[in-house]
Length: 345
Length: 268
Image (cartoon, rainbow over all chains, first blue to last red; front, side, top):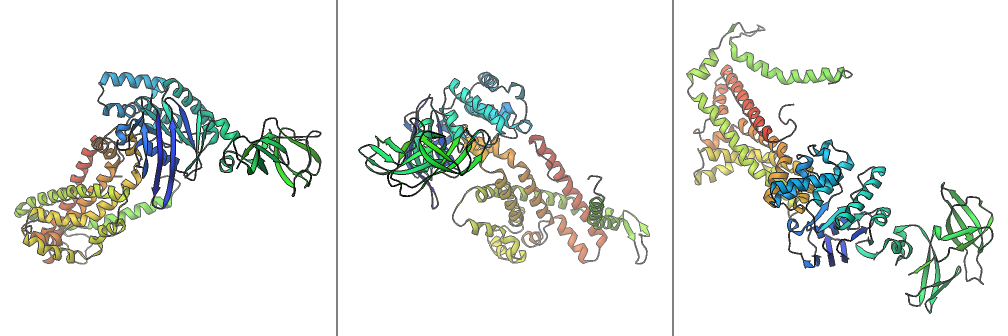
Protein backbone atom coordinates (compact mmCIF):
# COMPACT_ATOMS: atom_id res chain seq x y z
CA UNK A 1 0.00 0.00 0.00
CA UNK A 2 1.49 3.21 -1.15
CA UNK A 3 0.56 6.83 -1.34
CA UNK A 4 1.31 8.86 -4.42
CA UNK A 5 1.55 12.52 -5.03
CA UNK A 6 2.59 14.87 -7.77
CA UNK A 7 3.77 18.35 -7.00
CA UNK A 8 3.60 21.42 -9.27
CA UNK A 9 4.00 19.35 -12.41
CA UNK A 10 4.25 21.07 -15.78
CA UNK A 11 4.48 19.44 -19.17
CA UNK A 12 4.54 20.91 -22.67
CA UNK A 13 4.65 19.31 -26.10
CA UNK A 14 6.08 22.04 -28.32
CA UNK A 15 3.90 25.09 -27.84
CA UNK A 16 1.12 23.05 -26.29
CA UNK A 17 1.17 23.47 -22.51
CA UNK A 18 -0.59 20.24 -21.62
CA UNK A 19 -0.31 20.20 -17.83
CA UNK A 20 -0.14 23.42 -15.85
CA UNK A 21 1.18 23.30 -12.34
CA UNK A 22 -0.71 20.20 -11.27
CA UNK A 23 -0.52 19.03 -7.68
CA UNK A 24 -2.44 15.98 -6.59
CA UNK A 25 -2.13 13.60 -3.70
CA UNK A 26 -3.57 10.16 -3.44
CA UNK A 27 -3.63 8.30 -0.19
CA UNK A 28 -2.66 4.73 0.32
CA UNK A 29 -5.36 2.39 -0.96
CA UNK A 30 -7.46 5.22 -2.29
CA UNK A 31 -9.34 5.11 -5.60
CA UNK A 32 -9.09 8.48 -7.33
CA UNK A 33 -10.46 9.47 -10.73
CA UNK A 34 -8.94 12.08 -12.97
CA UNK A 35 -11.83 13.50 -14.93
CA UNK A 36 -11.64 15.83 -17.88
CA UNK A 37 -12.66 16.33 -21.51
CA UNK A 38 -10.60 14.55 -24.20
CA UNK A 39 -7.28 16.23 -24.83
CA UNK A 40 -7.10 17.87 -21.39
CA UNK A 41 -3.81 16.15 -20.60
CA UNK A 42 -5.07 13.46 -18.27
CA UNK A 43 -3.38 10.58 -20.09
CA UNK A 44 -0.15 12.59 -20.08
CA UNK A 45 -0.46 12.90 -16.30
CA UNK A 46 -0.77 9.13 -16.05
CA UNK A 47 2.30 8.62 -18.22
CA UNK A 48 4.26 11.05 -16.04
CA UNK A 49 3.34 9.07 -12.95
CA UNK A 50 4.32 5.81 -14.65
CA UNK A 51 7.58 7.29 -15.89
CA UNK A 52 6.80 6.97 -19.60
CA UNK A 53 7.05 10.72 -20.05
CA UNK A 54 9.25 13.17 -18.17
CA UNK A 55 7.74 16.33 -16.68
CA UNK A 56 9.31 19.69 -17.58
CA UNK A 57 9.20 20.76 -13.95
CA UNK A 58 7.75 19.51 -10.69
CA UNK A 59 8.07 16.17 -8.92
CA UNK A 60 6.39 12.79 -8.68
CA UNK A 61 6.46 10.96 -5.35
CA UNK A 62 5.49 7.34 -4.90
CA UNK A 63 5.39 6.05 -1.34
CA UNK A 64 6.86 9.31 -0.13
CA UNK A 65 10.03 8.98 -2.20
CA UNK A 66 10.74 11.27 -5.14
CA UNK A 67 11.01 9.17 -8.27
CA UNK A 68 11.79 11.74 -10.92
CA UNK A 69 14.95 9.86 -11.84
CA UNK A 70 13.56 6.36 -11.46
CA UNK A 71 12.93 4.67 -14.83
CA UNK A 72 9.45 3.37 -15.66
CA UNK A 73 10.41 -0.26 -15.12
CA UNK A 74 11.43 0.37 -11.51
CA UNK A 75 8.61 2.66 -10.39
CA UNK A 76 6.06 -0.01 -9.67
CA UNK A 77 3.34 2.13 -11.21
CA UNK A 78 1.62 -0.08 -13.76
CA UNK A 79 -0.66 1.34 -16.46
CA UNK A 80 -3.54 -0.58 -17.97
CA UNK A 81 -3.97 1.08 -21.34
CA UNK A 82 -7.20 1.91 -23.10
CA UNK A 83 -6.52 -0.66 -25.84
CA UNK A 84 -5.30 -3.19 -23.20
CA UNK A 85 -1.94 -3.58 -25.06
CA UNK A 86 -1.87 -7.35 -24.69
CA UNK A 87 1.14 -8.99 -26.33
CA UNK A 88 -0.51 -10.63 -29.34
CA UNK A 89 2.14 -13.31 -29.76
CA UNK A 90 1.78 -14.60 -26.21
CA UNK A 91 -0.96 -16.66 -24.60
CA UNK A 92 -3.01 -15.26 -21.73
CA UNK A 93 -0.75 -17.05 -19.27
CA UNK A 94 2.43 -15.81 -20.92
CA UNK A 95 1.03 -12.28 -20.92
CA UNK A 96 0.39 -12.41 -17.20
CA UNK A 97 3.76 -14.05 -16.62
CA UNK A 98 5.62 -11.29 -18.49
CA UNK A 99 6.16 -8.96 -15.56
CA UNK A 100 6.82 -11.81 -13.11
CA UNK A 101 9.44 -13.43 -15.34
CA UNK A 102 11.35 -10.15 -15.45
CA UNK A 103 11.36 -10.05 -11.64
CA UNK A 104 13.20 -13.38 -11.49
CA UNK A 105 10.75 -15.04 -9.14
CA UNK A 106 10.91 -18.85 -8.96
CA UNK A 107 8.86 -20.72 -11.50
CA UNK A 108 6.60 -22.44 -8.97
CA UNK A 109 5.89 -19.15 -7.20
CA UNK A 110 5.03 -17.51 -10.52
CA UNK A 111 2.78 -20.39 -11.47
CA UNK A 112 0.95 -20.10 -8.16
CA UNK A 113 0.45 -16.35 -8.51
CA UNK A 114 -0.76 -16.63 -12.10
CA UNK A 115 -3.27 -19.34 -11.21
CA UNK A 116 -4.57 -17.30 -8.28
CA UNK A 117 -4.92 -14.22 -10.45
CA UNK A 118 -6.65 -16.12 -13.27
CA UNK A 119 -9.07 -17.34 -10.67
CA UNK A 120 -9.74 -13.85 -9.28
CA UNK A 121 -10.36 -12.57 -12.79
CA UNK A 122 -12.54 -15.59 -13.62
CA UNK A 123 -10.57 -16.45 -16.74
CA UNK A 124 -8.92 -19.71 -15.63
CA UNK A 125 -10.33 -21.50 -18.68
CA UNK A 126 -8.69 -19.02 -21.04
CA UNK A 127 -5.10 -19.49 -19.83
CA UNK A 128 -3.80 -21.05 -23.03
CA UNK A 129 -5.73 -18.76 -25.42
CA UNK A 130 -4.14 -16.07 -27.54
CA UNK A 131 -5.52 -12.52 -27.10
CA UNK A 132 -7.11 -12.54 -30.58
CA UNK A 133 -9.47 -15.30 -29.45
CA UNK A 134 -10.79 -13.27 -26.49
CA UNK A 135 -13.75 -10.91 -26.18
CA UNK A 136 -13.33 -7.29 -25.10
CA UNK A 137 -14.20 -8.00 -21.47
CA UNK A 138 -11.87 -10.99 -21.29
CA UNK A 139 -9.03 -8.95 -22.80
CA UNK A 140 -9.55 -6.37 -20.13
CA UNK A 141 -9.47 -8.98 -17.39
CA UNK A 142 -6.18 -10.26 -18.78
CA UNK A 143 -4.76 -6.73 -18.86
CA UNK A 144 -5.88 -6.18 -15.26
CA UNK A 145 -4.52 -9.54 -14.20
CA UNK A 146 -1.17 -8.79 -15.81
CA UNK A 147 -0.98 -5.53 -13.86
CA UNK A 148 -2.37 -6.76 -10.52
CA UNK A 149 -0.26 -9.92 -10.36
CA UNK A 150 2.78 -7.66 -9.92
CA UNK A 151 1.18 -6.15 -6.81
CA UNK A 152 1.89 -2.67 -8.15
CA UNK A 153 2.44 0.21 -5.75
CA UNK A 154 0.10 2.30 -7.88
CA UNK A 155 -2.35 0.99 -10.47
CA UNK A 156 -3.08 3.42 -13.28
CA UNK A 157 -6.15 2.88 -15.45
CA UNK A 158 -6.32 4.80 -18.72
CA UNK A 159 -9.95 4.99 -19.92
CA UNK A 160 -10.21 1.25 -19.30
CA UNK A 161 -13.90 0.92 -20.06
CA UNK A 162 -14.25 3.02 -23.19
CA UNK A 163 -13.54 0.11 -25.55
CA UNK A 164 -16.28 -2.07 -24.08
CA UNK A 165 -19.94 -2.45 -24.99
CA UNK A 166 -22.28 -0.46 -22.71
CA UNK A 167 -23.74 -3.50 -20.88
CA UNK A 168 -20.36 -5.06 -20.30
CA UNK A 169 -18.99 -1.71 -19.20
CA UNK A 170 -21.20 -1.60 -16.13
CA UNK A 171 -20.25 -5.16 -15.20
CA UNK A 172 -16.56 -4.40 -15.54
CA UNK A 173 -16.88 -1.19 -13.53
CA UNK A 174 -18.40 -3.08 -10.66
CA UNK A 175 -15.80 -5.80 -11.04
CA UNK A 176 -12.92 -3.32 -10.95
CA UNK A 177 -14.41 -1.47 -8.01
CA UNK A 178 -14.73 -4.71 -6.02
CA UNK A 179 -11.27 -5.86 -7.03
CA UNK A 180 -9.72 -2.58 -5.95
CA UNK A 181 -11.37 -2.78 -2.56
CA UNK A 182 -10.26 -6.40 -2.07
CA UNK A 183 -6.67 -5.89 -3.18
CA UNK A 184 -6.44 -2.43 -1.63
CA UNK A 185 -4.22 -1.13 -4.44
CA UNK A 186 -3.81 2.63 -4.69
CA UNK A 187 -5.58 3.30 -7.97
CA UNK A 188 -5.84 6.24 -10.32
CA UNK A 189 -8.44 6.10 -13.08
CA UNK A 190 -8.41 8.48 -16.00
CA UNK A 191 -11.72 9.04 -17.74
CA UNK A 192 -13.86 11.56 -19.57
CA UNK A 193 -17.02 9.86 -18.33
CA UNK A 194 -18.29 11.64 -15.20
CA UNK A 195 -20.70 8.86 -14.26
CA UNK A 196 -17.80 6.43 -14.25
CA UNK A 197 -15.67 8.72 -12.13
CA UNK A 198 -18.49 9.33 -9.63
CA UNK A 199 -19.41 5.67 -9.47
CA UNK A 200 -15.95 4.27 -8.83
CA UNK A 201 -13.90 6.74 -6.90
CA UNK A 202 -13.76 8.30 -3.47
CA UNK A 203 -12.34 11.50 -4.84
CA UNK A 204 -12.40 13.07 -8.28
CA UNK A 205 -9.83 15.45 -9.74
CA UNK A 206 -11.32 17.58 -12.49
CA UNK A 207 -8.74 18.72 -15.05
CA UNK A 208 -9.81 21.17 -17.74
CA UNK A 209 -7.41 22.95 -20.09
CA UNK A 210 -4.43 21.44 -18.30
CA UNK A 211 -5.35 22.92 -14.92
CA UNK A 212 -6.57 21.06 -11.88
CA UNK A 213 -9.92 22.77 -11.34
CA UNK A 214 -11.21 20.92 -8.32
CA UNK A 215 -10.26 17.87 -6.28
CA UNK A 216 -13.15 16.74 -4.17
CA UNK A 217 -15.70 14.04 -3.41
CA UNK A 218 -18.09 13.18 -6.27
CA UNK A 219 -21.00 14.75 -4.39
CA UNK A 220 -19.22 18.06 -3.86
CA UNK A 221 -18.07 18.13 -7.47
CA UNK A 222 -21.65 17.73 -8.62
CA UNK A 223 -23.41 19.94 -6.10
CA UNK A 224 -20.73 22.40 -5.08
CA UNK A 225 -18.44 23.07 -8.00
CA UNK A 226 -15.96 25.90 -7.41
CA UNK A 227 -16.27 27.40 -10.86
CA UNK A 228 -18.73 27.64 -13.73
CA UNK A 229 -16.18 25.74 -15.84
CA UNK A 230 -16.39 22.67 -13.59
CA UNK A 231 -20.13 23.02 -13.15
CA UNK A 232 -20.68 23.15 -16.92
CA UNK A 233 -18.46 20.16 -17.53
CA UNK A 234 -20.29 18.07 -14.94
CA UNK A 235 -23.79 18.90 -16.11
CA UNK A 236 -26.26 21.50 -17.28
CA UNK A 237 -27.34 24.16 -14.81
CA UNK A 238 -29.05 27.52 -14.47
CA UNK A 239 -26.90 30.44 -13.39
CA UNK A 240 -28.56 33.40 -11.69
CA UNK A 241 -26.59 36.58 -11.06
CA UNK A 242 -26.68 38.27 -7.69
CA UNK A 243 -24.60 39.94 -5.00
CA UNK A 244 -22.89 38.68 -1.88
CA UNK A 245 -22.84 40.88 1.13
CA UNK A 246 -21.99 39.79 4.62
CA UNK A 247 -21.70 36.10 3.60
CA UNK A 248 -25.20 36.16 2.23
CA UNK A 249 -26.02 35.89 -1.42
CA UNK A 250 -29.21 37.48 -2.63
CA UNK A 251 -30.86 37.26 -6.00
CA UNK A 252 -34.36 37.19 -7.52
CA UNK A 253 -34.99 33.68 -6.21
CA UNK A 254 -34.16 34.57 -2.64
CA UNK A 255 -31.24 34.54 -0.22
CA UNK A 256 -28.62 31.86 0.02
CA UNK A 257 -25.74 31.06 2.28
CA UNK A 258 -22.34 32.03 0.89
CA UNK A 259 -20.13 31.57 3.91
CA UNK A 260 -16.95 30.78 2.02
CA UNK A 261 -17.00 33.70 -0.40
CA UNK A 262 -16.09 37.36 -0.01
CA UNK A 263 -18.49 40.16 -0.87
CA UNK A 264 -19.19 41.11 -4.49
CA UNK A 265 -20.91 39.80 -7.60
CA UNK A 266 -21.54 36.06 -7.77
CA UNK A 267 -23.74 33.44 -9.37
CA UNK A 268 -26.18 30.96 -8.01
CA UNK A 269 -25.96 27.55 -9.64
CA UNK A 270 -29.10 25.45 -9.81
CA UNK A 271 -29.11 22.10 -11.59
CA UNK A 272 -32.22 21.50 -13.67
CA UNK A 273 -33.47 19.04 -11.06
CA UNK A 274 -32.96 21.47 -8.19
CA UNK A 275 -35.99 23.56 -9.22
CA UNK A 276 -39.53 22.44 -8.58
CA UNK A 277 -42.43 23.36 -10.81
CA UNK A 278 -45.97 23.30 -9.46
CA UNK A 279 -49.45 24.84 -9.70
CA UNK A 280 -49.35 26.67 -6.42
CA UNK A 281 -46.14 27.32 -4.51
CA UNK A 282 -43.32 29.70 -5.44
CA UNK A 283 -42.75 32.44 -7.97
CA UNK A 284 -45.18 32.88 -10.83
CA UNK A 285 -43.76 32.12 -14.25
CA UNK A 286 -44.82 31.35 -17.80
CA UNK A 287 -43.88 28.13 -19.61
CA UNK A 288 -42.15 28.76 -22.92
CA UNK A 289 -41.32 25.31 -24.16
CA UNK A 290 -41.44 21.69 -23.15
CA UNK A 291 -39.32 18.69 -24.17
CA UNK A 292 -40.66 15.29 -23.17
CA UNK A 293 -37.86 12.79 -22.47
CA UNK A 294 -39.77 9.92 -20.86
CA UNK A 295 -38.64 9.78 -17.25
CA UNK A 296 -38.18 13.55 -17.13
CA UNK A 297 -39.61 16.54 -18.95
CA UNK A 298 -37.46 19.61 -19.48
CA UNK A 299 -39.34 22.91 -19.31
CA UNK A 300 -38.08 26.33 -20.23
CA UNK A 301 -39.84 28.95 -18.17
CA UNK A 302 -39.68 32.71 -17.96
CA UNK A 303 -40.06 34.91 -14.91
CA UNK A 304 -41.25 38.35 -15.96
CA UNK A 305 -39.08 41.35 -15.21
CA UNK A 306 -39.94 43.07 -12.00
CA UNK A 307 -38.15 45.93 -10.27
CA UNK A 308 -39.41 44.94 -6.84
CA UNK A 309 -37.85 41.49 -7.11
CA UNK A 310 -34.61 42.92 -8.42
CA UNK A 311 -35.09 41.60 -11.93
CA UNK A 312 -34.28 44.29 -14.49
CA UNK A 313 -34.76 41.74 -17.30
CA UNK A 314 -36.92 38.67 -17.72
CA UNK A 315 -35.23 35.53 -16.30
CA UNK A 316 -35.26 32.28 -18.24
CA UNK A 317 -34.74 29.01 -16.36
CA UNK A 318 -34.70 25.35 -17.28
CA UNK A 319 -36.33 22.75 -15.08
CA UNK A 320 -36.43 18.98 -15.12
CA UNK A 321 -39.60 17.53 -13.69
CA UNK A 322 -41.24 14.16 -13.55
CA UNK A 323 -44.59 15.91 -14.00
CA UNK A 324 -45.28 16.31 -17.71
CA UNK A 325 -48.71 17.92 -17.38
CA UNK A 326 -47.67 21.57 -17.90
CA UNK A 327 -48.15 23.05 -21.37
CA UNK A 328 -46.32 25.90 -23.12
CA UNK A 329 -48.05 29.25 -22.73
CA UNK A 330 -49.61 28.33 -19.40
CA UNK A 331 -48.81 29.87 -16.03
CA UNK A 332 -47.08 27.91 -13.29
CA UNK A 333 -45.05 28.43 -10.14
CA UNK A 334 -41.44 27.53 -9.45
CA UNK A 335 -39.41 27.28 -6.30
CA UNK A 336 -35.95 26.13 -5.33
CA UNK A 337 -35.77 22.66 -3.80
CA UNK A 338 -34.89 22.45 -0.12
CA UNK A 339 -31.21 23.00 0.63
CA UNK A 340 -30.44 23.31 -3.08
CA UNK A 341 -28.52 26.13 -4.67
CA UNK A 342 -24.80 26.66 -4.65
CA UNK A 343 -23.11 30.04 -4.89
CA UNK A 344 -19.98 30.33 -7.03
CA UNK A 345 -17.94 32.91 -8.86
CA UNK B 1 -11.26 -16.20 -55.36
CA UNK B 2 -15.00 -16.28 -55.00
CA UNK B 3 -17.26 -17.74 -57.64
CA UNK B 4 -19.27 -14.56 -57.93
CA UNK B 5 -16.40 -12.71 -59.52
CA UNK B 6 -15.57 -14.42 -62.82
CA UNK B 7 -14.21 -11.18 -64.24
CA UNK B 8 -11.72 -10.77 -61.43
CA UNK B 9 -10.87 -14.40 -61.80
CA UNK B 10 -10.18 -14.02 -65.50
CA UNK B 11 -8.16 -10.86 -64.93
CA UNK B 12 -6.13 -12.60 -62.27
CA UNK B 13 -5.10 -15.40 -64.62
CA UNK B 14 -4.42 -12.98 -67.47
CA UNK B 15 -1.99 -11.09 -65.26
CA UNK B 16 -0.37 -14.31 -64.11
CA UNK B 17 0.04 -15.35 -67.74
CA UNK B 18 1.52 -11.99 -68.71
CA UNK B 19 3.97 -12.15 -65.82
CA UNK B 20 4.97 -15.71 -66.62
CA UNK B 21 5.29 -15.41 -70.40
CA UNK B 22 8.88 -14.09 -70.40
CA UNK B 23 9.87 -16.81 -67.95
CA UNK B 24 8.39 -19.51 -70.18
CA UNK B 25 10.22 -18.01 -73.13
CA UNK B 26 13.40 -18.13 -71.09
CA UNK B 27 12.96 -21.80 -70.32
CA UNK B 28 12.22 -22.69 -73.95
CA UNK B 29 15.28 -20.74 -75.02
CA UNK B 30 17.59 -22.86 -72.85
CA UNK B 31 16.61 -26.08 -74.64
CA UNK B 32 16.38 -24.87 -78.24
CA UNK B 33 19.64 -25.65 -79.97
CA UNK B 34 18.25 -24.80 -83.41
CA UNK B 35 15.27 -22.42 -83.78
CA UNK B 36 15.24 -20.63 -87.17
CA UNK B 37 13.04 -17.62 -87.73
CA UNK B 38 9.66 -18.70 -89.13
CA UNK B 39 9.13 -21.88 -87.09
CA UNK B 40 6.85 -21.62 -84.11
CA UNK B 41 8.75 -24.15 -81.97
CA UNK B 42 12.45 -25.00 -81.78
CA UNK B 43 13.49 -27.58 -84.41
CA UNK B 44 16.30 -29.15 -82.40
CA UNK B 45 16.01 -29.56 -78.63
CA UNK B 46 19.00 -30.49 -76.47
CA UNK B 47 20.76 -29.94 -73.17
CA UNK B 48 23.85 -28.56 -74.84
CA UNK B 49 23.66 -25.20 -73.13
CA UNK B 50 23.18 -26.71 -69.72
CA UNK B 51 26.21 -28.85 -70.38
CA UNK B 52 28.15 -25.75 -71.27
CA UNK B 53 27.15 -23.93 -68.13
CA UNK B 54 27.45 -26.71 -65.61
CA UNK B 55 30.22 -28.89 -66.99
CA UNK B 56 32.45 -26.85 -69.25
CA UNK B 57 32.47 -23.67 -67.22
CA UNK B 58 34.30 -24.20 -63.94
CA UNK B 59 33.30 -20.75 -62.68
CA UNK B 60 29.56 -21.47 -62.50
CA UNK B 61 29.33 -23.09 -59.10
CA UNK B 62 31.63 -20.53 -57.52
CA UNK B 63 29.56 -17.71 -59.05
CA UNK B 64 26.31 -19.10 -57.66
CA UNK B 65 27.84 -19.43 -54.21
CA UNK B 66 29.26 -15.89 -54.40
CA UNK B 67 25.93 -14.44 -55.53
CA UNK B 68 23.96 -16.10 -52.76
CA UNK B 69 26.50 -15.39 -50.04
CA UNK B 70 26.79 -11.80 -51.16
CA UNK B 71 23.01 -11.41 -51.17
CA UNK B 72 22.67 -12.85 -47.67
CA UNK B 73 25.48 -10.70 -46.40
CA UNK B 74 23.99 -7.58 -47.98
CA UNK B 75 20.57 -8.38 -46.51
CA UNK B 76 22.15 -8.89 -43.10
CA UNK B 77 24.14 -5.66 -43.10
CA UNK B 78 21.18 -3.73 -44.50
CA UNK B 79 18.91 -5.01 -41.72
CA UNK B 80 21.44 -4.20 -39.01
CA UNK B 81 21.27 -0.59 -40.16
CA UNK B 82 17.65 -0.42 -41.30
CA UNK B 83 16.02 -1.72 -38.10
CA UNK B 84 17.30 1.02 -35.77
CA UNK B 85 17.00 3.59 -38.56
CA UNK B 86 13.36 2.68 -39.21
CA UNK B 87 12.63 2.77 -35.49
CA UNK B 88 14.22 6.20 -35.14
CA UNK B 89 12.35 7.66 -38.11
CA UNK B 90 9.02 6.17 -37.06
CA UNK B 91 9.06 6.66 -33.29
CA UNK B 92 11.40 9.49 -32.33
CA UNK B 93 11.29 13.14 -33.19
CA UNK B 94 14.64 14.79 -33.79
CA UNK B 95 16.01 17.78 -35.62
CA UNK B 96 16.27 17.38 -39.38
CA UNK B 97 14.05 14.29 -39.52
CA UNK B 98 12.57 15.35 -42.87
CA UNK B 99 16.05 15.80 -44.30
CA UNK B 100 17.14 12.37 -43.11
CA UNK B 101 14.03 10.81 -44.62
CA UNK B 102 14.92 12.38 -47.98
CA UNK B 103 18.58 11.47 -47.68
CA UNK B 104 17.66 7.82 -47.28
CA UNK B 105 15.96 7.85 -50.69
CA UNK B 106 18.85 9.59 -52.47
CA UNK B 107 20.52 6.39 -53.76
CA UNK B 108 17.31 5.70 -55.69
CA UNK B 109 17.06 9.18 -57.17
CA UNK B 110 20.66 9.84 -58.16
CA UNK B 111 21.81 7.65 -61.12
CA UNK B 112 23.65 4.70 -59.61
CA UNK B 113 26.67 5.08 -61.87
CA UNK B 114 27.23 8.57 -60.50
CA UNK B 115 27.08 7.28 -56.94
CA UNK B 116 29.39 4.37 -57.65
CA UNK B 117 31.98 6.46 -59.47
CA UNK B 118 32.11 8.85 -56.54
CA UNK B 119 32.62 6.06 -54.03
CA UNK B 120 34.96 4.12 -56.30
CA UNK B 121 37.78 6.61 -55.81
CA UNK B 122 37.50 6.41 -52.04
CA UNK B 123 37.26 2.63 -52.10
CA UNK B 124 40.44 2.34 -54.16
CA UNK B 125 42.23 4.44 -51.57
CA UNK B 126 41.18 2.32 -48.62
CA UNK B 127 41.70 -0.84 -50.61
CA UNK B 128 38.12 -2.08 -50.67
CA UNK B 129 37.89 -2.53 -54.44
CA UNK B 130 38.02 -6.08 -55.67
CA UNK B 131 36.98 -7.44 -52.26
CA UNK B 132 33.82 -9.25 -51.23
CA UNK B 133 33.30 -6.78 -48.44
CA UNK B 134 33.65 -3.76 -50.73
CA UNK B 135 31.07 -5.11 -53.16
CA UNK B 136 28.72 -5.97 -50.29
CA UNK B 137 29.08 -2.46 -48.91
CA UNK B 138 28.19 -0.74 -52.17
CA UNK B 139 25.22 -3.06 -52.72
CA UNK B 140 24.01 -2.36 -49.21
CA UNK B 141 23.79 1.28 -50.21
CA UNK B 142 21.26 0.43 -52.91
CA UNK B 143 19.27 -1.98 -50.77
CA UNK B 144 19.06 0.49 -47.88
CA UNK B 145 16.29 2.81 -49.17
CA UNK B 146 13.85 -0.09 -49.58
CA UNK B 147 14.70 -1.69 -46.26
CA UNK B 148 14.50 1.55 -44.27
CA UNK B 149 11.22 2.43 -45.96
CA UNK B 150 9.72 -0.93 -45.02
CA UNK B 151 11.05 -0.87 -41.45
CA UNK B 152 9.79 2.69 -40.94
CA UNK B 153 6.29 1.63 -42.00
CA UNK B 154 6.44 -1.46 -39.83
CA UNK B 155 7.42 0.56 -36.76
CA UNK B 156 4.72 3.12 -37.53
CA UNK B 157 2.12 0.33 -37.59
CA UNK B 158 3.45 -1.50 -34.53
CA UNK B 159 3.79 1.76 -32.57
CA UNK B 160 5.18 2.32 -29.10
CA UNK B 161 2.19 1.06 -27.10
CA UNK B 162 3.37 -2.49 -26.42
CA UNK B 163 6.90 -1.37 -25.60
CA UNK B 164 5.59 1.18 -23.12
CA UNK B 165 3.40 -1.49 -21.58
CA UNK B 166 6.37 -3.83 -21.29
CA UNK B 167 8.46 -1.16 -19.61
CA UNK B 168 5.85 -0.35 -16.96
CA UNK B 169 5.62 -4.07 -16.30
CA UNK B 170 9.27 -3.92 -15.33
CA UNK B 171 11.14 -5.08 -18.44
CA UNK B 172 14.47 -3.61 -19.49
CA UNK B 173 15.43 -2.46 -22.98
CA UNK B 174 17.01 -5.74 -24.09
CA UNK B 175 14.11 -7.87 -22.81
CA UNK B 176 11.61 -5.58 -24.49
CA UNK B 177 13.40 -5.81 -27.81
CA UNK B 178 13.78 -9.60 -27.77
CA UNK B 179 10.43 -10.56 -26.25
CA UNK B 180 8.10 -7.83 -27.52
CA UNK B 181 9.50 -5.84 -30.43
CA UNK B 182 11.25 -8.55 -32.43
CA UNK B 183 8.29 -10.93 -32.73
CA UNK B 184 6.10 -8.01 -33.76
CA UNK B 185 8.41 -6.71 -36.49
CA UNK B 186 9.60 -10.11 -37.76
CA UNK B 187 7.34 -10.08 -40.85
CA UNK B 188 8.73 -6.64 -41.72
CA UNK B 189 12.30 -7.78 -41.16
CA UNK B 190 11.68 -10.72 -43.46
CA UNK B 191 10.19 -8.50 -46.18
CA UNK B 192 13.01 -6.00 -45.94
CA UNK B 193 15.55 -8.81 -45.93
CA UNK B 194 14.03 -10.48 -48.99
CA UNK B 195 13.98 -7.19 -50.87
CA UNK B 196 17.61 -6.45 -49.98
CA UNK B 197 18.54 -9.97 -51.05
CA UNK B 198 16.82 -9.43 -54.40
CA UNK B 199 18.43 -6.05 -54.93
CA UNK B 200 21.85 -7.61 -54.33
CA UNK B 201 21.21 -10.61 -56.60
CA UNK B 202 20.25 -8.31 -59.48
CA UNK B 203 23.24 -5.97 -59.19
CA UNK B 204 25.59 -5.85 -62.16
CA UNK B 205 27.18 -2.44 -62.48
CA UNK B 206 28.18 -2.24 -58.80
CA UNK B 207 29.83 -5.67 -58.86
CA UNK B 208 31.48 -4.80 -62.16
CA UNK B 209 33.04 -1.52 -61.04
CA UNK B 210 33.81 -2.13 -57.37
CA UNK B 211 34.51 -5.84 -57.79
CA UNK B 212 36.94 -5.02 -60.58
CA UNK B 213 36.50 -8.44 -62.16
CA UNK B 214 37.67 -10.29 -59.07
CA UNK B 215 34.25 -10.85 -57.55
CA UNK B 216 32.36 -13.04 -60.01
CA UNK B 217 28.62 -13.30 -59.44
CA UNK B 218 26.08 -14.94 -61.75
CA UNK B 219 25.08 -11.61 -63.31
CA UNK B 220 28.76 -11.03 -64.11
CA UNK B 221 28.68 -14.27 -66.12
CA UNK B 222 25.41 -13.44 -67.87
CA UNK B 223 26.24 -10.05 -69.38
CA UNK B 224 29.25 -11.13 -71.56
CA UNK B 225 27.09 -13.87 -73.08
CA UNK B 226 24.40 -11.36 -73.97
CA UNK B 227 26.98 -9.05 -75.48
CA UNK B 228 28.30 -11.87 -77.67
CA UNK B 229 24.74 -12.83 -78.72
CA UNK B 230 24.73 -16.13 -76.86
CA UNK B 231 21.24 -15.65 -75.49
CA UNK B 232 20.70 -19.32 -74.86
CA UNK B 233 23.55 -19.52 -72.41
CA UNK B 234 22.51 -16.27 -70.76
CA UNK B 235 19.06 -17.80 -70.36
CA UNK B 236 20.48 -20.83 -68.58
CA UNK B 237 22.35 -18.58 -66.17
CA UNK B 238 19.21 -16.53 -65.58
CA UNK B 239 17.20 -19.62 -64.75
CA UNK B 240 19.97 -20.76 -62.46
CA UNK B 241 19.95 -17.42 -60.70
CA UNK B 242 16.18 -17.39 -60.27
CA UNK B 243 16.03 -20.94 -58.96
CA UNK B 244 18.90 -20.56 -56.52
CA UNK B 245 17.52 -17.28 -55.20
CA UNK B 246 14.06 -18.77 -54.71
CA UNK B 247 15.41 -21.82 -52.90
CA UNK B 248 17.45 -19.59 -50.57
CA UNK B 249 14.51 -17.35 -49.72
CA UNK B 250 12.17 -20.28 -49.27
CA UNK B 251 14.53 -21.97 -46.83
CA UNK B 252 15.09 -18.73 -44.94
CA UNK B 253 11.41 -18.20 -44.44
CA UNK B 254 10.94 -21.81 -43.35
CA UNK B 255 13.61 -21.35 -40.70
CA UNK B 256 12.29 -18.02 -39.45
CA UNK B 257 8.72 -19.29 -39.27
CA UNK B 258 9.85 -22.10 -37.03
CA UNK B 259 10.59 -19.53 -34.33
CA UNK B 260 8.06 -16.82 -35.04
CA UNK B 261 4.34 -17.19 -35.45
CA UNK B 262 3.25 -15.00 -38.34
CA UNK B 263 1.41 -14.83 -41.62
CA UNK B 264 3.02 -15.73 -44.90
CA UNK B 265 5.32 -13.02 -46.15
CA UNK B 266 6.99 -14.16 -49.33
CA UNK B 267 4.65 -16.80 -50.71
CA UNK B 268 0.96 -16.07 -50.83
